[in-house]
Image (cartoon, rainbow, N blue to C red; front, side, top):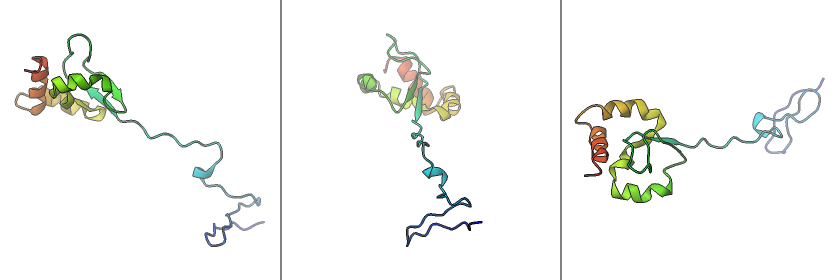
Length: 114
């Protein structure tokens, strides 16, 4: 029976298993592709924007899309209402509470950015 050896960084020898085959660590297994980093998911919690350009609870993956740039420039409060999905419930609670920034941003967007 062969002895299990440790990798030796100085000699470059690999550890071998009991059958004499190179011992592969999980990250070195052939055919196992690395999973891509999960993209951040954002959700718009403000009111629907007239014309259908942005609907409440629209989810964005990988950031805010470029086609909203002009809308965000005209109404900067919209950007404040695009939040990480994991913060949805807490932000919704603050939108419902008068005097909070989220409530103010929501009302500003609802009134057309005035």
